Length: 563
Image (tube, rainbow, N blue to C red):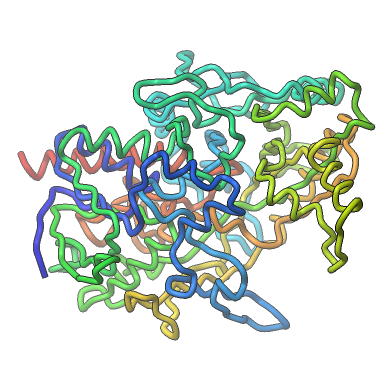
């Protein structure tokens, strides 16, 4: 086995890992950034935009690397490999991670998200704990991400919006489809104030990154102009220019090494192409492999000093895994239901439907009571033509061809357009949603796979249903037809957090408030693992901000060690 030494080894190149690498190299430290996947050039993202799902093509072979998923079925817990359940918990295995294929809808968490128990009380069956930091601690890092990543949008005062700096670092919003005027009018008639969604997408070129080219393929697809603020574009490429970052793609970490109960020395890796193993040494190690994979790595790194898994004296590693609860809905606007001018605007291609509703983020109602609600995000149906055509066909085996098929596709592509909404609300942590190791299965590298047990607290769906009904009133006011709604019966596998909670008590948490492990003095975690609750927004902006905060703590510790 070969040996190399660095100031810091970062495992995972997504938002959590890439951000730490960026900040550390900027501070003058030598960093090794390890990524299991490939390092793709921008032009690679423009080669197959009509593939059914680009995200899936960027993930490992599901028969070689997978998770087992355990769910309560027929009165008992049943575990099956994820490929048998038709789902993957890998979310973009490449340099920059899942941020390459995100939609780029960015929202800050609200101050009340940091104190859910204090504001809304305990909920039976839920393991709710307030954060050990407050909004004010994270706010400067949210501000910094606006500048580093490059966000577009409008800073507005709105119901339940967090306080913002008076300095607006946002670019102008991305171009909008004219139908948003109909949406805004519908909201006004319902006494609602819609928000222009902040996006991690450049509306104007900046440096080597070009502005948005409006393909409308953001979600599940990479960006070939650099407009999307992925960790690859915003963090890793600038860090490489420092000369202090060693980017090692096709390197899979199978174990974190330690030489004492309180100190790690480096990592053991497999080069995925050659299958050769080697050890990399570093003064610090930080995990940013996504919540479930960071927990799996800690559990797989058990040794004589840490028999229950590395940094797991609390036995909390993998516990209280959370997702994003909510649901979705859609309605159809067509030539028959719109004026000619409205229909012309509706059929414009490429421009965004940048609207969010936060009126019910916190609910204090005489009928429904006082409870935490969530965010409703409105958008167009994804513009992948193949996917849209397939969804329009009969689902019960009936075949269409000839004139009937032509008429169906004409209706879908020429005479109508779908408006969708997605609901984001808290997935309440419970004892029954967690990650453990499944020793019955091993991946292609010989590591036991992660077993993800999933149990949804009933409050998740109650809140999701409450928000869905209100979203439907907006679609109805717009004149939409064929409205469909679905509550979240299965968690979105691309929105995972928890598993390594941070807190002040080493007996009940894995990480301290700076996201350093309680047990090991030079081991940090920088992905979404630290979150005890997830708020009611997509996690990405918060992961970015917190990773910058973690990097500051690491830099301070490195300065002390080298003084």
